[in-house]
Amino acid sequence: MTIWALLLLAAACDPAPALKGRGFFEQGRFADAEAQFRLAVEQPCGLARQTSDRIHLAAALREQNQLPQAAALLDTVSALAAQPAETQISYWNGRALIDEHAGRLSQAEAGFQNAKALLTPSTPVHLHLQVAANSARLHLRQGHLREAEEALLRVQTQPGWRSGNVVAYDLNLAELRRLQGRPREAESILRPLLGEAAPVPAQLRGAIANNLANLAARRGAHREAETLWEISNRALREAYGPRHPAVAKGLNNQAAYLVSRKRYDAAEALYRQAIAMQEDPLLLNNLAVLLHQRARLEEAEDAYLRAVRLYEQAALPGRDALQLYGNLALLAMERKRPAAAIAYFRSFVRLLPLAVPADEIMLASYLRRYEKLLRSRQEAAEAERVAVLAMRYRVRSALRVEN
Image 1 (cartoon, rainbow, N blue to C red):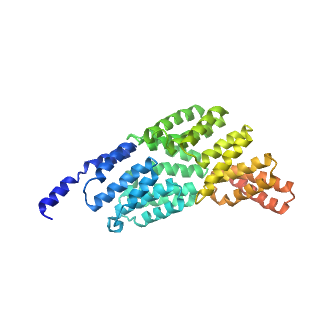
Image 2: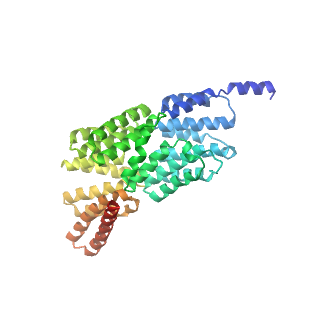
Image 3: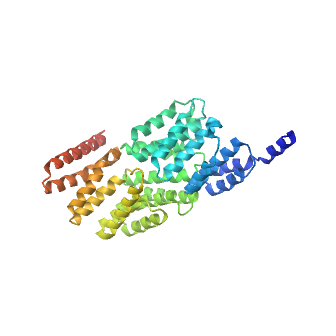
């Protein structure tokens, strides 16, 4: 190839679309970012630039819940091992996020491990922060609090780590503290984030406001909670559009708050609106709980069983399945089906390793009901074992509150 051909090729590879796309992505404007990254991908650039642009386009698609398209795009990346380490880290981080969003948690964990293995002291801090925050969030989703804390603390060994964009990092640290039963620390981490001098991207602003709303509701600050949910829902719709799973999750959290305030009709409407966006087992369980409380038992059982089917299709059940099986067991008891109730309670007990400290009061309550059912059926040995488990969770919860 002549020098003139090389110059023409270089001139044809315009960096502007990729730069604009990154700017839009950081602002949470994912559709605009996608449009720019598509322009970048269509250019006849070198292999390194092509790979980088594909990774960024896949990220924009992922944030818009276009998971198969995002995964297919990353499948087109070739000669990854020949790429710079930073590119490989971004690839594995992006691949893991797609798997996590799709519920493929074991594949996501493997992807994050691949990204971690490529990190070195000379890796840019922003990549350390991204991998730490994302892998910690996956651990939190699985109920692995110790591993989440290790991932978050490890990044603090990097010089100047607070000079990077730490909003997503702090968001996951706050969630860790909440799940550890330390809500005041969680709130102290989150509250300054909404007052950042630099504007926080809409998707992160929505998540921060949502988590603060949950914490405010927990301490009885109802007016503040409602204001924060309005901020959250507005920001999430701004970032993702009106029908994204993240928007559905925000509606779910607000509906749970409305239930606590006995505003049942408004809560049911929000649950059904969220389920229309995404048929998720957590959303179905929460709708079923509301129907259960209102003695609409057949409708409740149908929603519970729809959630069970979704969990059974998943490679790894989530921690939220604990409450689902506990609720199904209680419903079976109400409907005079003790054998079914015991089967559901056994599924509940098998999932206890997924529990986190914030679950302890809930676990003790379900286990006490299970113990009473076993005693009513003269299954004394099993009842004693369950009673010991229930006492263990009650004591742990009491000690944590005292501390």
